[in-house]
Image (cartoon, rainbow, N blue to C red; front, top):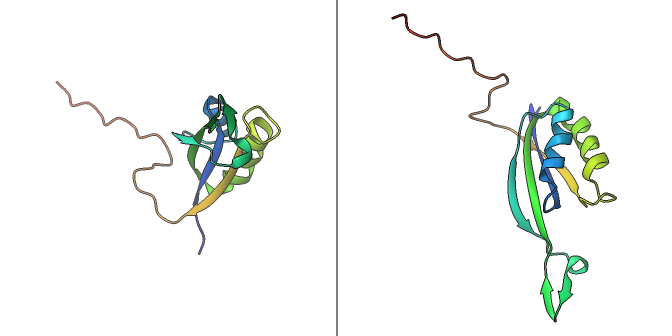
Length: 114
């Protein structure tokens, strides 16, 4: 089965979702969805006054044509990867069906003559 689209998921420290979208748009992405999240890795948890604090994260979901996937993932690695302040990871999942997504912006219908 050949997939025409992929969903790229990028998980970064809170405050870095704009950097994710800037990098993705540089390689052809048109937009994405940002979700608030919380990290659960034990080594990420910090203790403050004997209270364990889990770091706040953002998940960015980006639907892209499959041919853009590798360039976008590489751009994300460079901009917000684990060796940057964003501490991001990114991966892609194949998408077999999409509704409500057009390849090009829709044109406005012609106005009726008065």
